[in-house]
Amino acid sequence: ISKIGSGYHNIDLGSSHGISIKDITKLLKLLTNNKITELKFGALSYRNNEVMNPNLDLILIKELGWESKINIEDGLKNIIDYEKMNLK
Image (cartoon, rainbow, N blue to C red):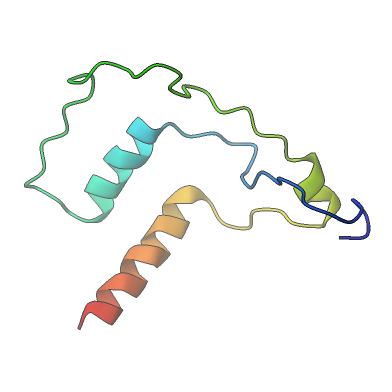
């Protein structure tokens, strides 16, 4: 943390490859083999001040030496597999 000084810092975490919540939701439905849930995108109106395109600042996290090593699909598969193993 000495690179960025002491005190509180809000540090965004992410990669340079953005993905929408809609795409993550569709991917999770596919990866979990969910045939029951019907996704109804657009069924509800957007709320005031809803963040449509987050603007991440990855400079600080990169200065600390962090970078994403796996893509979103592999990361979600890992989480799903872990949860399945721990449900038993």
